[in-house]
Image (cartoon, rainbow, N blue to C red):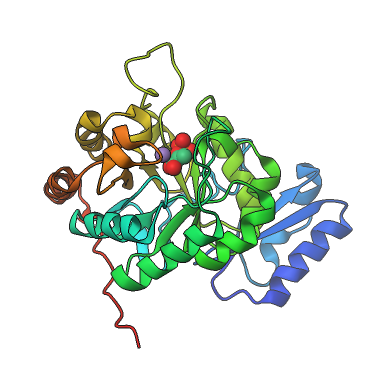
Length: 347
Ligand code: PEP
Ligand code: MN
């Protein structure tokens, strides 16, 4: 059961709801999104029904929810949500392109990739400083030095930063630089990490686990929401199947399925799903056509030198082609291409 507070509700109104539920032997979790606060109730639903929660000050609705994920479900929040990352929207009316290098390698490489991203229609910059590599011998990322590079490139290009965090102990550090925290496919079921990003006060991009069902993915999002953070964007990035021609199989149907079950925006990663440069444009077209709220793309100024995932990185000319694909297709699916933020002059 979920109690939806009205826009005028005060902190005291929220506290009264929580106190009443706890006095009745239940547990209450408060989530404050951009536009409103909701209180998720855990315990005896029949008993909660006797509490007259609907009549309490500040309460706008009380909703019974039948699916196991509650706060992220559309049963509790009909309208599709817009998540804002340092002023850049991701939601049902826009098409948001996120692009950048798989990994931050050097200041020059990151700046060059960010400029390619911006020229290619991106309004957010991706780039990993902490890399969750399958092999312990592969490049693991620059860590905090990489975060500093990203922050400098944000100042230079105006693009807010999306970057991955892999360890709960690093969440505060990464959140002090990032505008959006990324949880990667290998960590979708790392529940302590989900709880930590849920408390970090920054929007989160949650990639689907490569072996996860859509319901498991939404339950992972619920872990974040339950800690009070409803600013979550889901990212379909391909799943494991018997097929070996591509790195992963892009589950294109996951986009409308997840959008029907959840109010959260759903974006697609055509780079990590196909794992091949030649598939990034076709899969991007498919993602936009199916109704994705955005796409996230790997770009690199010299893919042959990349320390991570060069085979799937777009070069400048591909990225410009992607920009025209996104600009042409967005209106056909009733969306506006999200513009990049203005560059704020330094000094
Ligand atoms: C990434 O986006 O850099 C990444 C590692 O992706 P995934 O978690 O989808 O493999
Ligand atoms: Mn990668």
